[in-house]
Image (cartoon, rainbow, N blue to C red; front, side, top):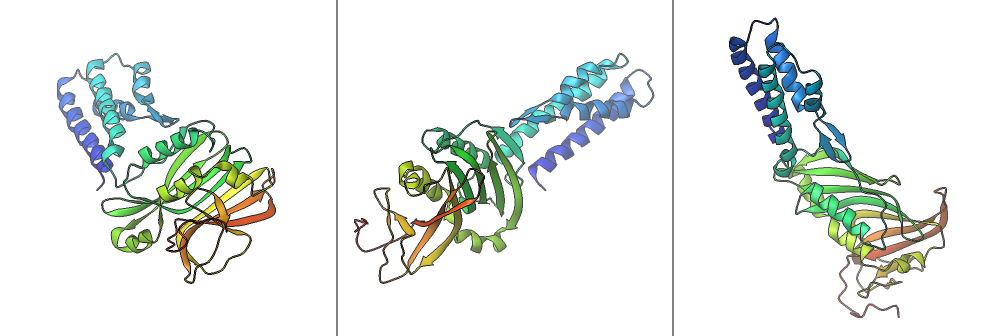
Length: 296
């Protein structure tokens, strides 16, 4: 049973017991017990706005404030409001369930600190030391303004792995939703094969934007990521790599295949149609020769 379910169980038990006890003390009133439970439930009702939860039910209890046995029914609204406060703090220590919500964060650009602030919001919300990328897609303008984003992340919890989808759209809203959950035994093998979320982020935000924008002559740039490592055994003009100077250079092949993660960079029209320009960019690789990693 999750912490949140324990909180709800405690709410119903305490509301029921308190309602039965107050039913013996109040002035005679038909159906007092059910009215008391109504005010308890009203006190716990909330409405999410931009990532915040407004105690709309508790505020409405002032509108429906009764004249008969008002003090005892007010106790019910206070009980509900108390558990509303408790539920706000449940996500801080309950890792067994991820609550869907949204945050209004405004415009984001890869060329200033707004991308980092968005990332900080995501990391705080997920609240885990072990986050890996399953797959992702980002669309930027040629100037580096974020148009849309989708992350599909695998998050390690104490007894499971949660698959969490994060979306950003042009309205400036960041949304979170859990789409799946795997137990530790069935999810660990797949989790180990994925790239760390931070490694993917570093490949994008630590590389100068001009390195990407100068490669594609299109109003929109699409970045597609696959979190699984892959073997690369050939080289061509459309295959690049991020070197240690954070530059995009031509991929060169060693004697042995290279194990790496990749970014699929492609150009899009303003209507979202492909322009035909496409590059495969390798990152997070291990190469033991030619330490300069230049484009010779």
